[in-house]
Length: 130
Image 1 (tube, one colour):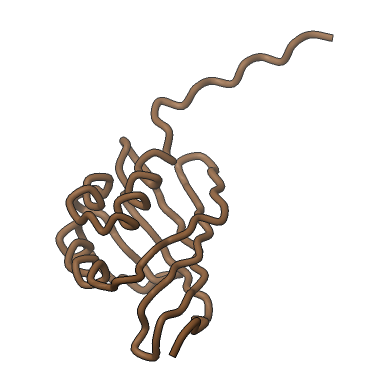
Image 2 (image 1 turned 180 degrees about the vertical axis):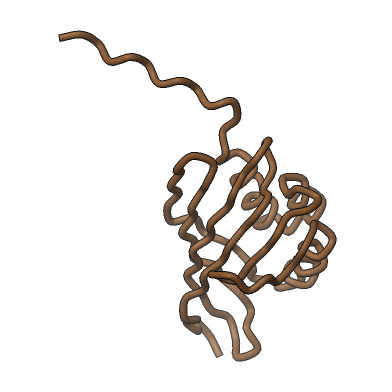
């Protein structure tokens, strides 16, 4: 029996920009959060509702989101296929009705070390306090 050929190392790991933006999201650091996003990135509600076109619109959405005192995205799992990274997260939010959680499926397309497209599928929110 021969050893299998080693797999080639990808030129860049697509999980790196995804992990960096999640870390910055949890720190509510808008400057670090924006670093992994391409200037012309597209940001969708799954499957095809465009929510933001370009880094400036993504920044504006998150400046508001980062004002939530309990905001936190807990990574449940991460799967990589080629240049696509799929994260399953449970996000703690401050909803108008109170603090709660929502499951989110996040799909990121990465090119040249930057997030160029992202899709988000939100589950049902669960209130943890009124």
